Picture 1 (tube, rainbow, N blue to C red):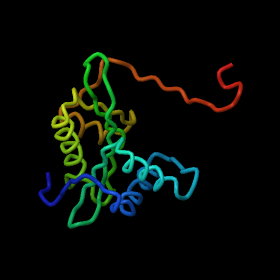
Picture 2 (cartoon, one colour):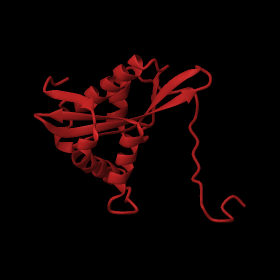
Picture 3 (cartoon, rainbow, N blue to C red):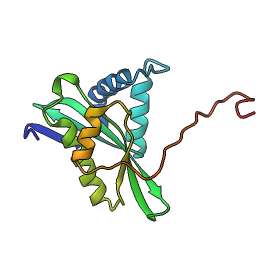
Length: 158
């Protein structure tokens, strides 16, 4: 890991820089926000409500990446489990250790909070991310993940 990468917990004052990184993350996954201020509003809510841990990776004082983690619960472990939901590093900063520093910071904070573990998902074709997670001790889970959108239409479930 590059010693010049510093990871810290993001604050509301980091919102402009964090929102820029979040927009790049959304773009990477082909997601278009419903509104122009959607990313800022979403991050503001997470930070104000304290329902996410948002980590900011910096090199020479500039934000180069972020991770967003959601504490949730595991009934089987009877403890909290952290979900590493988002991790993004600017393309020009990749390979310098920011992603690894974010993963390690997430694991350290989860351990300090008494969490049973950290879970995550990544795209099946994102081999770079998979290699990073595997070298940091993550393994494929025993359970399959299922997902269904929840439509708002009256006949959505019928």
